[in-house]
Length: 313
Image (cartoon, rainbow, N blue to C red):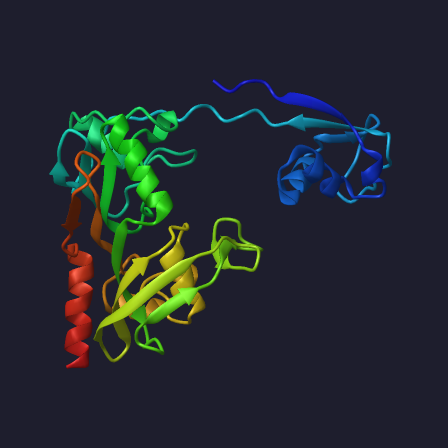
C-alpha cells in the first residue's frame, strides 16, 4: 500500500536569488531539474503559499512548499516458472542461468512479465538476501530483449565477492552481436560516455554528461549486409552495446529502438535485437578459481544467421 504524499517546506537561500523554481528545487532537494519541472507542472509547488510554475523566479528568504509524490508500493517477487530458462551451473554459492528473451532480471514498477528471480524461486532455489527486496541475489542484469548468461548469488559471501568483481571490472563478459554493415576498423574500442537520452528518458545515448563507457569488439564473421562481432564490456552501462554500436553507425540488427533497419530484421525473421550474452567468466567466490561458462544461440538468433549466411553465399 502506498504511503501518503509528503509536503516539505524549504527556505530559499540568498545564494539562489533570481533562480528559476525548477533550478532552485533541484539544487535544494538534490534531484534532477526535469523532476523538479514535473512537480511544478503537476501543481505540487508553491512559493510563499501561491502555486507556481517551473519558470517563476525565487527570491532569497521566500519559502518553497513541495508536495513530494508518495513512494511506489514495494515490488514483490512472485514465484513463477520461466519457460526456456536454463540452469547452466548450480552450487552452494551461486547459480548461472541462461536467460531467454522476454524475461527481466527482477521485478520492477510497471513490469508484469516473468523474471529470473521469480523463476528461480519457483524452481526451489534460495538466493542471497543482500540487495533490495525485489532484486536479492542479483549482481548484474540483462535487458529483457537480450538472451544469455547471468550469474545470481545464493550465499552472502558470493553476493559480496561477485559484486566486487563487477565493480572492479575483472569479470569477463562477452557478447555476440550481429550488427548492420561493417565496422571500420573491423576490431576496435568504443570509448564514449553514456547517459539518459536528452529527449526520451526511456532511452540512453552517448552524451558528454554520461558515465564513462568502454566497449571492445572483434569481427567473427562478415556477411554482405552485416557483421557478427565478439564484444567485451569493460563497463556495464544500461543498453551499452546497443547504444555504442548505434552511435558507431552499426546498430544491432533488429534493434529498432536504436535505429536498426526494420526491413533487414523482417527478412531475417527477427522480432528483437540480435544480441546474446555468450560467455561469462569470473573468480569463483568459494576458492578464487576461474570459472567460465558459455551459452548457445537461441533458435531465433541461429535462424537469422542461417538466413544471412545463405544470402551472402
